[in-house]
Amino acid sequence: MKRIVVKVGSNVLTREDGKLDITRMSDLVDQIAWLKENGYEVILVSSGAVACGKRELKIEHKLDSVEQRQLFSAMGQAKLMNLYYDLFREYGLHVGQVLTMKENFLAERQYNNQRACMEVMLENGVVPIVNENDTVCVTELMFTDNDELSGLIAKMMKAEMLILLSNIDGLYNGNPSDPESTVIRKVTVGDDASKYIQSSKSSKGRGGMESKFNTASEVAKAGMQVFIANGKTDNILINILTHPEEAVFTEFSK
Image 1 (cartoon, rainbow, N blue to C red):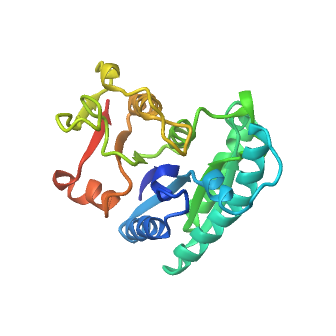
Image 2 (image 1 turned 180 degrees about the horizontal axis):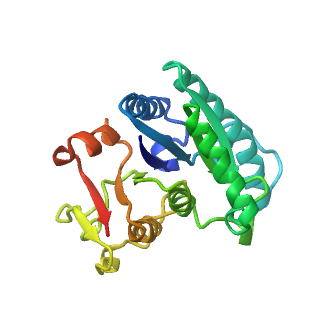
Image 3 (image 1 turned 45 degrees about the vertical axis):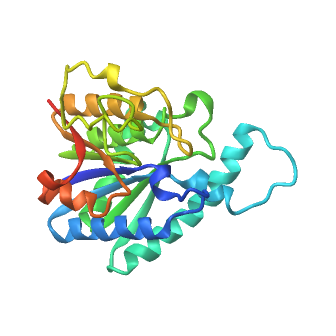
């Protein structure tokens, strides 16, 4: 079976008002279910817990940034996983939660235990849903963002492919808001594409195109295909794999 890591960002999973986009979540689950039916193992790295938790509780007193992240992620992760559970259950698929920290990739024993956990999940048809453990990860303990995490997961699990889903179509040769800009279809490791990267970050997540470019380049060096694509485009995962000529994305390769 071909093994794929799919990372979905907060801007894909939420609407303009900050609420979860259940329709988009359902569409992504539909696509992952199709992938599994067609011989793929899928590991889902999902953002969205903090954004989800912010909509659940009205705070009457001021919280600092760490307290906010811990509170909202704790509440939001429970809601997020419950929604994934219900959506995957429609296809008779099981999901398992994997919350991790940067230090789990540094200590050999923790690294091996984490890998073994996901291996046994995949062997038994369970879809691992991975996120950073924001309730305890603060400052130096944090990943740069879930782009970095998804790259580490892809290499650890020896995936064949990493797909980074954002709310834009890929890496542009200029500002994405400029109608003259176009998506760079293919990037080879070693290409100097840094001049095309916009420094702005997403409004709801911690990442940005620079983070995705760095992650994609590192993972491609390891021999994996990497795609940056728009997670709000219908059937984007299926089209990348079955009709790439009809899909818009940036592909990184060795």
